[in-house]
Image 1 (cartoon, rainbow, N blue to C red):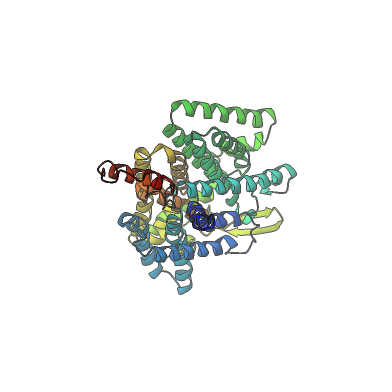
Image 2 (cartoon, rainbow, N blue to C red):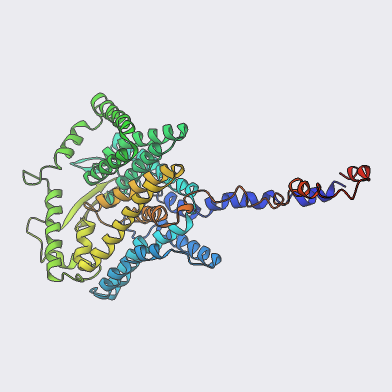
Length: 479
């Protein structure tokens, strides 16, 4: 007698559980890309395991789109994310060689089109977005911990004759890698702390953000400092004056304790900070090289203002447009690598790199796409629900950080794939329908037994049947 009921009830919870975890499972390939960036990077390798995993992310998103058998992107998302293809394709056609065209086209499409679209399709709700954001914080803690150890033990990259620069597992060849990862962690943790009402998440995220300020400072990356200050300042203003005052007070207290109390890199940090303003008054060689390459990029663009000189062609035109003050390479050593000269193949400014290689067409299409993402994300955050405010703040902060940091760096190195992930998160928040930010309807999908409510259906039918007076005992017995 009891076996039919058991047989009919046991399969029901399984689909419900699968539907509840499916949005989280779908985002695991994106998390795998983030986790693989914690592995050591070979000094002469242009491809990393994270790049291979990004191909898996694109394949998973393609399979998912085919299984849904519908339009994977909205019209707005297709236009905004597909707009950079125009300038990239035209610049690839004007490249100096077929090899440059293929490699440049693949890299740009990977970083700014394919992976962002894949992340947009794989992130289904705020739970998946939180998982990716916390994976960024975890990667930042891992790389930051290695960087602090490198500073304390003198095993980091060479900086002013001492091996004290924190570079994590990226090595001196990709000196901006750890700074980018740690800055992403600071911004993501700040957004998660400011936007949540859960006390535990607020405390953990705020603690992670404050702890990551140490390796960020020891990276000696002025561009990452400026971008982080701008992004976190914007998040504080969006969160409210009261929270902004609390976080600023905590940040000042941590800075005083670390720098003033323990003297953690006080002299080096002070010299690095003052060098930001020394543009004309005795600047260091890195500042001279950067501004010389910026001037060269603008001069290259003047020669072909509409379509540029072609992908990966900046290095070929650099020497004919740069001043004599520019050094052709920078010296790198430390962190387990011998001394080597690193050629300066880009202007260290993403906007000027696009302007020189893709012309005004490429700058308008690519920068226009990023600006549209930022505007749509901020507009939706003002309209969006309170439940996803932590994701909204973190995603908007990451996008703003990247747009500011592009003033001081460009794509290149293993951390480029994180740029694609952050653009995908921004696209998920800015371009998906409003109900996609909420958790998927996993509370009621597995309740086929609830629609048949015998009590509500039998009550209205009994009052109009007085013709069945007797047999109360026969009816109550089977009940």
